Structures are given as structure tokens and as C-alpha cells.
Amino acid sequence: MWYYEKKLQYPVRVSSCNPQLAKYLIEQYGGADGELSAALRYLNQRYTIPDKVVGLLTDIGTEEFAHLEMIATMVYKLTKDATPEQMKAAGLGAHYANHEHALYYENAAGSAWTATYIAAKGDPIADLYEDIAAEEKARATYQWIINLSDDPDLNDGLKYLREREIIHSQRFREAVEILKEERDRKIFF
Amino acid sequence: MFTQVKYYQPYNSPHDPCPPIRVKSYQTPPQLYIGFQPQNLQQFSPKQALYCGTLWPAFYSPYPNPDGSDDK
Image 1 (cartoon, rainbow over the protein chains, first blue to last red):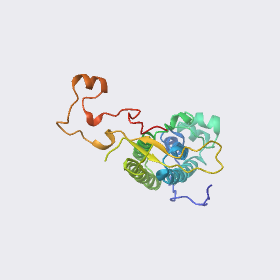
Image 2: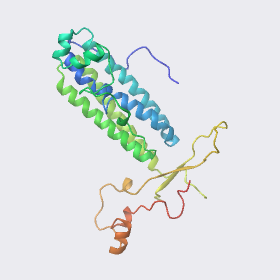
Image 3: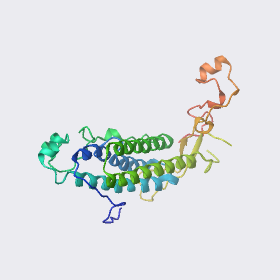
Image 4: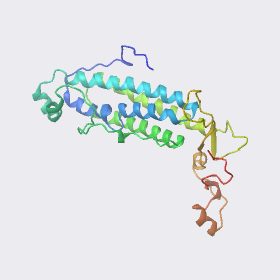
């Protein structure tokens, strides 16, 4: 089970009303390499991974939900007071028609989130390599969004999230090393 | 010593419905350990290489393991 702390992992500040940035940011909300995909990927794989790395998947999967909450806050702040005209000008006319100001799990191009974004092969090495790749792809996505953004306050939060992807990748790489070590060898069959 | 199969003992609850599998195995094939391939590795005969799918014994990963060590 989880305990909830009613605060964000890192403060989210947005300095300008810019719905267009929200359209790009939604990639990290409901995109293939976004935070929802990450959280669900790790919290699902953890059941069939060797015990030594179950806790790591639990912890990182949980942190991904904290990141999801930060992205949601950013998107919400960027769009909550936008007029329909502003939404249309930002390329969010179709989103407005379907969802008004509600958030939705979709990527920057408007495609709804799908479970086919996540993998669970059951082979511990294959799954951890998948996770390492996912972290690098999320890091790259943050870079591209930072390149598109001219909001320094927002970028502060995005740079924090990019750094977390780097640390998660490092921890998954360490998990692979743990699984490669020779231990718990079967003595007899 | 390097092996291509590792083992772990998953937790089993006394309330689990199926008979427990106490030891589970997973594959750790050789490419995980070698990094950039060194020069002048020992080679199989051409016929054996064709059969194995690789020219180099260092990369050969039989599955299932011929000694049965990865049996469930």
C-alpha cells in the first residue's frame, strides 16, 4: 500500500500563461516514454523479478507517480485560465472539444495512452534493459521539451526531472550488475 | 566462475494456492560480460560455428542449458 504526502516532490513554478507548452509537456504525461508509462511498467514488472531488485522497482515506480503529479501540475497551471481561443491557437482545439480544461493521458500529438507502451517480458535481464532504455528516452524527451520551452521557472522543474531519469538509469544498471553476480548458486538439482 | 544461469529463491506464502517453486532461474548469457569483443578469441571449426550460430565459443549460449541446470 501507499502513503500519500500532500506536497510535490519538487516545487512547480510556471511564469507565463503558455498553453502551447502544455501541449508539448503532455508527452511526459501520457506519452510512450512518459511518467505514467514508467510508473506502470516498473510496478508491474516487480512481481516477477528476483527478490534482490524488487524493492528498487517499487521505489522507482513510486517516484514516477510523484513525477506524474508534477507534470500534471505544470500542464494544469499552463492551461487552467486559457480561453478557447488561446487553446485553439496553441494547437489544443481538438483537446478542448473533447476535454475542455481537463487533463488526459495522451501524447503531444493527441494519441491516447495505451498499455502497448509498456513491456513485461518476464526475463529479468530483458526487463531491466527495457527500463534502462525507457529512462534514457525519458531523459531525451525532457531535453527536447526544455529546448522548446522559454519559461525559466518551468525549466527548473524539468531539469530536476531530467536529473532523476539519470539516477534511475544508474540504479537499473546497478540492478543488472547484481543479477549478473554469481550467488545463490544451485548446489544440487 | 562464470555461469549462464543464476538462481533465486522467491518468497512463498503458506497461503499460496499452488505448490511452491522454491528456486527460480534466469539466463545471464555471455554478451552481458564481455563488453567490446577482444581480438583473437578462440574459434569453432567452420562446421561447428554453423551449427552454433557463432564463430566464437566465448559467445555460445546453449538453451536450455545442456546439463539441465536451468530446469524449473
